[in-house]
Image (tube, rainbow, N blue to C red):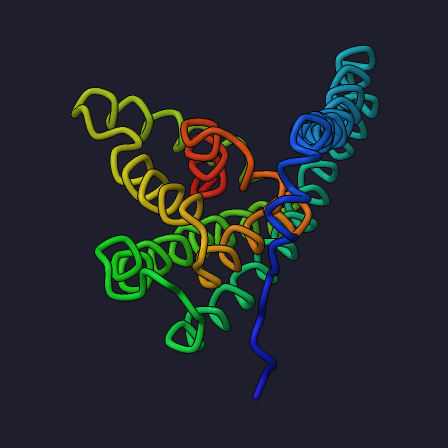
Length: 220
């Protein structure tokens, strides 16, 4: 049986003493992560530009093939990370009753165990399937996926349901997490980000934490 996954908080006083620098560090990590993703995208874009320069015959074929290969590699890396998150979240789910929580019989904790955690896992599974499809078709599926995602977003906005569940579940998780005293909430947030970032998030404003959690509950 796998060991229980636990992400621990640092001492609360130490956390608040370093609150300003911690916030700066968190946003620095976020920017760095975005920059890494952007650099990968830029590489793919450059390959696409190469296809445009040689937009005839062999140049077009080679450039286009390189572009889709870039999409496939990026999707493959993302799929591996998502699969690891799913396995860890499922392990957390199987051990849910064993995590200490001073609000264990409250609404938020019950909702976290029975609704929010399964929702997060399902969103991660959906994301994994899409990333595997892109990687498995050498990136050719990426165009279909972009179109599908755009149409789905338009449909949800038209119905007025876009992001409603995600926002509500993120709000409940953020509230429970920021109250403190729940090792399950800490471990879920720690798995979605990292133990270091989880500790930094514990000192952020509620609305900011909600937005950060919403970003991790996307299926794309």
